[in-house]
View (spheres, one colour):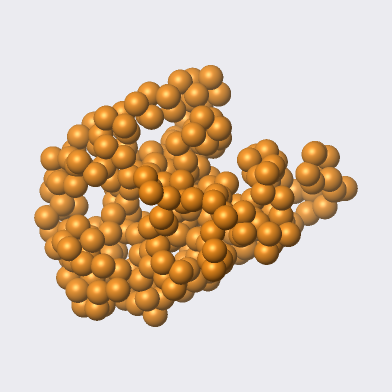
Length: 289
């Protein structure tokens, strides 16, 4: 199993220092979250907690993940980087395709696009994007971006995007994997048709059940025989060395973690506390996997 370091909600000026230590401590990747804004009043509950309260505060930092990735890649050149997750349908596919193509060159292709369809209507309102059809539009956006990333002259005639032959350059340094987050049936089906699935915080039993569903969808999509990442944010009943081994046996290929949280600290902890936590996790877990 590989390990990813989530630097969500930490001070952006610490990113490069954290990336260097993560690389030295055996982590495979750095992951970053994404939101454009946080409205003064949410019109819908947060879907990933029982009481509907977001896991983050209005003032928690959400810097642009792609600029952050380019910066970190210059000081930690062996790490991979991906978003966990990027609210894709709140954006324009041409803009996203161009950004990621560029990032691919600065990272030597060590990057991936982790996506979600979003849950916050206000984020779509400020982007002038339709919230209700975000799932279908996401699927077409992926189709459009994959065409643009070929570097060839392409055209597209769909429900949401329609354009005559054109070319986008440069094409990515390497193919950009697309990992899909979420655990609804549409999200699992979308993941099955792409390069990986990003799980949320689950119990081992919940994760096992979701993996069975995902396998069924991959079988239907004919993608069981190709490379596919299972990226978990850990299991709430398995935050131990033995638990990580169980997750690996279940098929999880990447576990994303916040070591400082495991050791009782918040993302607002001093930089040295986070550095020490990363090193400790590397010694106690990664080196023993």
